[in-house]
Image 1 (cartoon, rainbow, N blue to C red):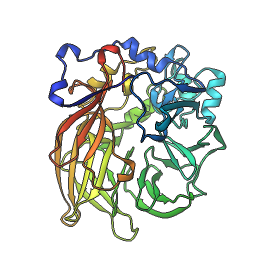
Image 2: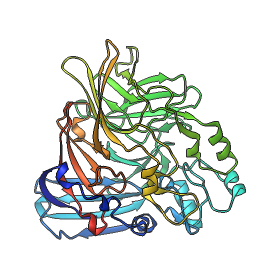
Image 3: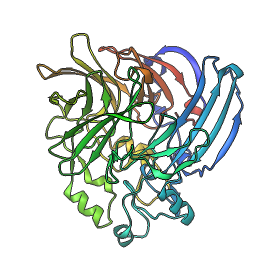
Image 4: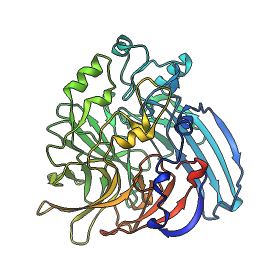
Length: 444
């Protein structure tokens, strides 16, 4: 992927004509996911400009790999975790790349067999109903997030415990999964995203266990990898959570309006559909913002957002000077699982246009919550995109700016071809800082 600095321009200046709505071929998009990466250790060459002198450290990147087998694609949700570590040395204008697969049990078995042995979360296997009925569903692929803390690298995934890697070699710990000193059981799912409390130098995590009355466990880990705080919260029904936010006072979860579909459950059990079909958007009731006090003593606060929505990722949240709570998130007004990254059952092609047509379009929404009156003011912006970021030391603190991956045509979701800087005031403005040229078929 290439990117060039273009200066600061208003978003309206970079909107392409409608003829560039999907400026890529399905073959190009498919090729990204079909490639078979492996172990690598390279010194990279700076082709243009230089590594900023102030930029020193390691950038870790996680994502799915090895998902094309038997002539068809598995859902990228089920691709095996592939970790890349870019070590940057600004004073020497140098960058090295080290990459390894996370040696999960599923990776070692499937890479050796070179065929699908697990159905996973979103995949329908070739070979028909009987094969899918007999296949194992639970497949920890450690492919979603990666975070370094306490001298180790954690590779996280939605449906199980994380795997740990050596930060220097990227070799997977032989113990395979990490349970935080026995805090989490083998049946616990640690959600894919974490937060960082820079004031206290703590990694903040959320684990979930159970389906009928799930129990959430928020816990905080210090620099010596000791769990120094746990707060539990029991729900009355299943709730899908991919990300959460923190402030000095609260852990914050945005309830996505999803329900368990019995029709989808039956189709999955019979081998006719992926596990994702069990999750169905429910627009019959509004979503809620849930504030769980970090002190573990005060009662949780649930505030209606007045409309249904689905939230994957959050920019940030913080306590305001008037004791309210601000939350900035990427939200869909409706969402359907099943076509992520353009996935289609038992085919050799991914088509992101199919994914775009099945969704409402993800936008940046702003929430201002009064915990006392339990009122929520909501602003739905027209800023599209995903994978929002702020400076990690500012998690839970007031931040003026954030960054988001976007398509240069605001009416399009995937594929992303630029990074956009967002001003996170309650009436946001948008400026493009970095873009890649869509004519070169490069993606962010």
